[in-house]
Amino acid sequence: MPRPEGRPGLSPRGRRGGAAALPSSALTAHQSLFEHARLRAGQSVLINGAGGAVGGYAVQLARRAGVTVTATGSERSRERLRAYGADRIIDHTATPLPEAGWR
Image (cartoon, rainbow, N blue to C red; front, side, top):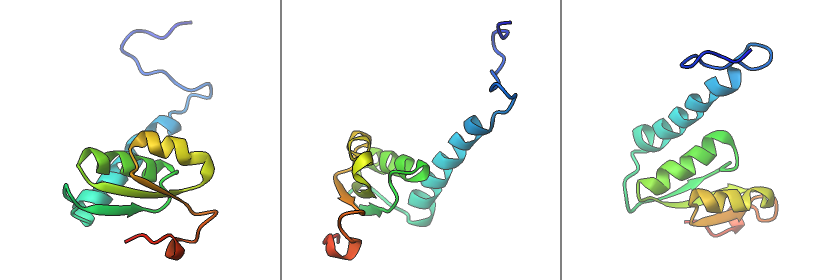
């Protein structure tokens, strides 16, 4: 049976958990960057764990705000991080962060 227009859809088990996590990740990233770190355009930031949910949002939000972004992630997330706008990507599985020369 199709769902009525204007009504949210439910997952097969009737749960909306995945959809509910989306705003939490974005809000956490926004608060971390702009409320706690007080980032502004022209600054630089290292986003550790950028391949995850919060990190992915952080990369996108920071770039949109004019911040230069260095992101850590594995090789498998490299293209996604590049698409999100990361200026530099450090593969943490190949190069320990202290040896990557981030400043």
